[in-house]
Length: 554
Image 1 (tube, one colour):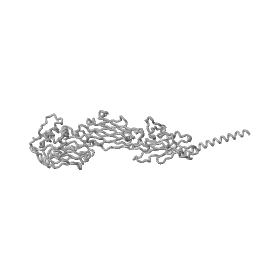
Image 2 (cartoon, one colour):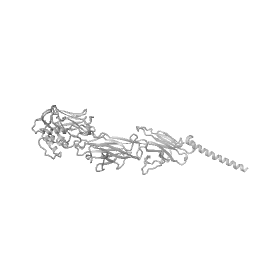
Image 3 (cartoon, helix red, strand yellow):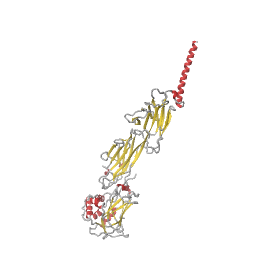
Image 4 (cartoon, helix red, strand yellow):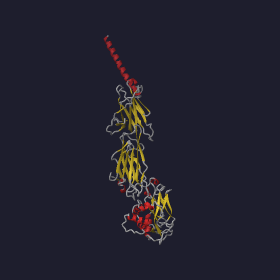
C-alpha cells in the first residue's frame, strides 16, 4: 500500500542553511540589501512522479533580505553564511513578530528585525514530520490576517506565483532573500493531495550557494493518503456467498502527517447495497501492527454511525478524527467490520456491492478543505433458481406443492425465509422454514445460494397425484469468472427421468395422476413396469388359484 507520500522524500536540509545563518548572525534593520532580482526557487516532486506538484499553484512571499557584509567565500565562490535583514514593510514585520509570539517561544524575542532572529534560532523543522518551532512559526504566520487577506491574495512586490508542471514549480526573477512558499491550489488542482504545509526556503546569493548547502531548491511537503479494501473471509477470486452469511471487510490506510494542524478530519465512509446489513458492534480499529499494535476504544477514540437510507442502502461512517492527532505518523490504520447477506437479494444472480472511501483534512489553515479518496467498490454474489410445478398432461399450474432443498451430500434441508413470495436462504431467521410451497402460479423462487450442487426434493404433492413417482433432481450452480454470465444453472440427475426439464433458467417439474402418464424411460419406466409386473403377477396368481379350486371340485 502506498503510505504517506512524502515519507521517503529527499528533503532540502533547511537546518543546515539555518545553522550557517546562526554562525554568522543577523544584521540590523539598516544593513544593505544585496538587491539582486535574478534569484529563483524550485519546488520539486517529493515522490519523483510529479503528481504532487503538477497543476498545483504556489505563492512565494519574501520575508527578509540578504546582507553579505563581512561574509567570506570558499574556493568555489560559495558563501560561509548569510546575514538576514527585515524588509521595509511594517505590516509584514508585525505579522512575523506576532507569529513568533504564538510559537511557544520562551526566550525574549526582539521586536526589531525579528526575521533575522527567526533565521538564527529556528533550526528544528527540516526533516519529516517537519514539526518544531519553525513549523509553529510558519503555521501561525500564514494563518495571520495579513497573510490571508493581503500577502498571499494581493499583488504585492514581495510575492510571486508559480504553477507546477513536469514535476516542478519554478519561481524566477526573485529578489534574493528568505521566503515562505504557500500552496494556494484548490482541491481540484491538487487532485487527491493535501495542500503542502508552508515551506521556508532561501534563494541563492548572486547565483552561489552556501559552502554546506544548496539554496533555492526544496521538495514539496504534501501527502496523499491511500486506502485499500479487502474481504477477510471471502476469496476475492471467488466472491460467492449465501443468504445469512457474514462478510468481514477490512479497510487499511495510514496515520497522516498532521504537523501544523490543530484538528484533523479522518473518517472512513462505507455504503452497503440494500442486500447487505451492517452487523452492529462489529467495527474494530487497530493502529499499527505486530507488537506495536494498539486497539482503539469506541466513542473515546472513534465513533461509528450507521444509517439506513430510504432506498435500503446503509451508510456506515467510522470517524477517527477525535484521536488521529495522537497517533504515530505513518502507522497503519486497520478497520474491520461485518455485514450480513439479508433477505432482499434477488432470486437469480445478485450483485451485492459496497463502496468505501476515506475523507481527510487537506489544509492546516482551512478546516473545510477535505480530500476524499476515490471510492473503492467491491462485490460479492449470490445465485438462485426458479421452478414451476405443473400437471404433466394438462399443464395446469399446481399451487401448494411442497419441496425441500439441501446441499448435495447432506441430509439436512436448508432453511429459508419467505420474502415477498421468494424463498431466500436464511439459516438464522426466526421464521425460517425447510418446507417450500409453490405459489398460485405453481412457481417457486429460491435465492441466496452460493455455487454448488443442490438436491431438490418434492415431499408432498397435491391430492389426486401419484405419490410413488415424486421427482427429485440436482441443480448445479456455477459462478462465472466475470460474474456477468447468466447461464450458470444446469440440470443434473433426476430420480424420475422425464419429469423435470430445464429451459430459459426455469426448471419445470411435472406431476402425474396415473402411472400410465409416466415417460417410458429411465426410472419412470422402471416404476411403471414394476407396477405392471406386480399387477400381472397378482392377476396370474388369482387365475391359478381359481383354476386349482375348480379342479378340486371336479
